[in-house]
Length: 178
Image 1 (tube, one colour):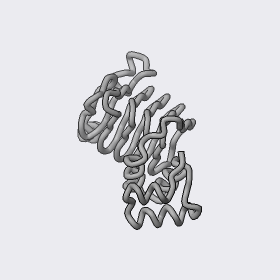
Image 2 (cartoon, rainbow, N blue to C red):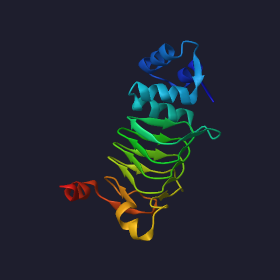
Image 3 (cartoon, helix red, strand yellow):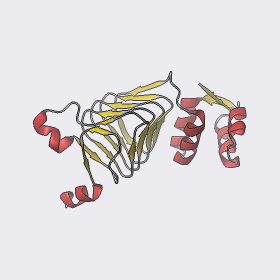
């Protein structure tokens, strides 16, 4: 899926965002995922969220990675599949769904257009949100004896559609770590 200068104008992009796009992509067009990668590199999660809200999910796109580590932000135009775990210090958002073989951890928020599944736990500094009508599943690859310890969903507010895993307030986790 391409993002073009004409689309950005039509969606009412701000001047700074439009100029940033043209500096990064002087031809006036780029693949959606490349634009999201550039915004993550430039530490512009606000622009990435704006773009994703306007362009919507790329239903054909699947970003598949082995592991995500030492990453500030990650945005996927479509579905995000993480074979192992993810550690993102900022924001993690996918246009379709997020699946991780192990855990998912983000310093700010985690958001997906569809469901969120993790083999272990899910942790976000702010909120965790799956698309309307989709669930959040943590602890899917754990032995039952490890489930209470690792199948935790840690966020400021309990996600509305938490199906598997147990919600834990981050303040409680901070007091446990002391």
